[in-house]
Amino acid sequence: MSTFMANSSNVVRKWYILDAAGKPLGRTAATAAVLLRGKHKPTYTPHVDCGDFVIVLNSDKAVLTGKKLLQKYHRTHSGYAGGLKETQYKKLMAERPEMAMSLAVKGMLGKNSLGRAQLKRLKVFKGSEHIHAAQQPVAWAE
Image (cartoon, helix red, strand yellow):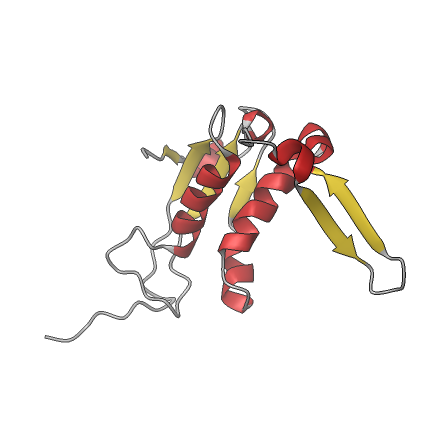
């Protein structure tokens, strides 16, 4: 008996919905990262992109515990002197909660071409409505 190794021809992708309302941002992001990588499947293969599509709803209602709203910052740098831009998570969650969720999931995926491909299957929405009804997504039971 040989070990099963998944490849791109035998990967079956499903669509899952995660509801972030009232849940910690990091916990929802961790669940999304597991689904995007495919670690919940018995056919998981580390070097193959065998994950599923994930729809995250109510990202604006996700909570940050402790003092993270005030103490946590999203930082970007242009590469030039004085090019540091900082955004407090209080402002980020108020204006662009989809970006906050995407950044959290991005940090939990691999830093390579496989991780970038997996991140493209993440769909984050601010409210409870989404545009992927035709794919017949299933709610993920945590």
